[in-house]
Length: 99
Image 1: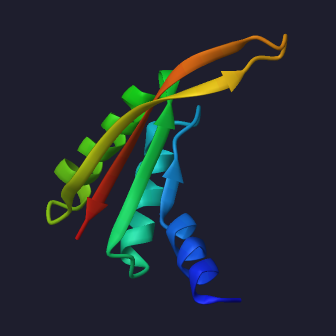
Image 2: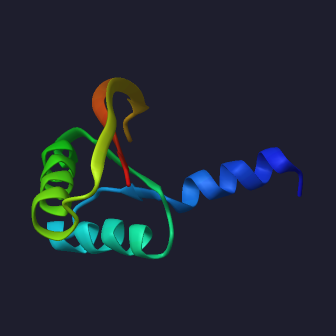
């Protein structure tokens, strides 16, 4: 495995993808990443999960780890192909926290 693959693997390790599970599941995942030695954790979400991603960030910072800072927030739009073959754009957010 070359250095680039190792860096890419490390990046994927510290990314939490937000979906439909309860918010506290994702908060636990972020806190666990930091407690396992990560210095940076990225929270990613699309569409309706964006508000949950913001909630996760706020809960981590305000209740569990006040020393965690927000490094960056990036918004974008991604084009997805629906089941019927049509294409639609969906909003996405990427929040990077650092300690």
